[in-house]
Image 1 (tube, rainbow, N blue to C red):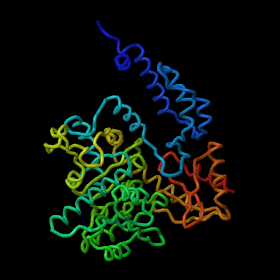
Image 2 (cartoon, rainbow, N blue to C red):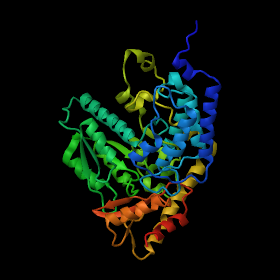
Image 3 (cartoon, rainbow, N blue to C red):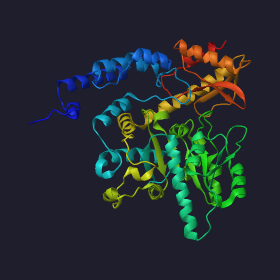
Image 4 (cartoon, rainbow, N blue to C red):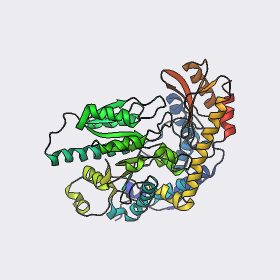
Length: 461
C-alpha cells in the first residue's frame, strides 16, 4: 500500500505544483521587467501584523494567497534597493541577466562547496575570480571564493593572515606575541573591528590624512611601535562613507621593511579599478596578499556575493579547511573546493549570477557602467559647489558624494529625508563627519540620472 506522506505531497510534481511554479515565475518575470517599480518604504510592525495576519498554520494558506500577501503587503514594506532614487548606504543595481540567472541557480539545486559535487559551477566561479584577480594585478595563480558579504570576506582573509603569521613564528622558533594586532585606518569599515572581536585580537586604528587617505608613513609609525605583534595591515579601497581609497602603494612599500599581511578591503570601491577614470587611484593593490570586492554593490550582481581573492590560495586553504571523517573524501584530494577558502562549509554557488552576466555582456559593458557612475559623481559635485547654501565636504574620488546644507541640524536632515521617501522621490539618509551632520549620494546604479539628483538638491531649498 502506498502511503501519501505530507513531505511527498510537498515535493511531488503535480498540477498543483505546476500552477505554483507558474505563479512564482510569472511574478518574477513581471518584477524583473518592470520599469516603474516604486521605492516603497517600511511600515510599523503593528501595521504589518494587521495587514498580513497569520500566515503560518498547520494547513497552509496556499501559494496564491501567500504570493499575493508578499506582492501587496510584504514587498511594499521593503525599500527597493535597485531603484534609481536609492542613494543611501551602498545601493545595488543587478543586471537583468544576473537576476534571471539567480533563479536558475536555485532551480538547479547546485551545491557550491566542493569540486566533487559542483565542479561545473566552481569552474565558472573560478573563471570570474581569475578575471577579477587579473584586473587587480594579482598573479595568475591567485584564487579564492565567493562568500556572503564583505564582513565574512574580511574575517576570512584576516583569519588566514593570522594563521600565516602564527606558522611563520612557529617555524622560526620565536615566541608568540601576547596579543596579535591589526593596523587599519580610523575610517576603515566597521567589519574590521567586528572581525577583531570574533578573533580576539586588537585593532590599532591609525588616523588618516585630512583627505581621508591612510598613507604609509602613518602605518610605519604603528609598525615600529608594535613590532611583530602586527600580523596584518588593512588598506581600504573605497571607504563606505566617502569612497576614499587609501594610498595602497605607500603601504605596500612597507613590506620591504616589515613582515605583515596586506589585506585590501575593496568591498565597495575596488570595482572602480575596471574604469580608466579611477584605475590610477589603486596603485599598489597588485602587492596585496588578499582582497575583497562585493559584486552585489558595484558589479551589478544580486545579493549576496563577496569575492575573496588570495595572492596565494594555499594560505587560505591552510587556515580554513575543515577536517572530519565524513569530509575525508574531499580533504584528501587536491581538487578545488570553495569550502576550504573561507569561514564556511555549506555554500550556495553565489558567483554564478555574476558569471552569467559577465559572459553575456562582456567586461567592457561593466567598465562603461562603472565609469558612468564616477562621471555622474563628478558632475553633481560641481553642481553642489555652484549652489549657495550647499557645501561639498570632500571631493569625490569614486561615486560617493558627501555634502552639507548650511544651517541644517540633524533634525532638519531627518525631516527632509523622511519627506523624500514618503513622497517616493528618493531614499537619501542623513550621515555625519567630524560631529557635523550631512548627507550623501552613493551612486552605483547606471539608471540614476543627473536630473534626478538635481531635483533632490532642489528639494533642500
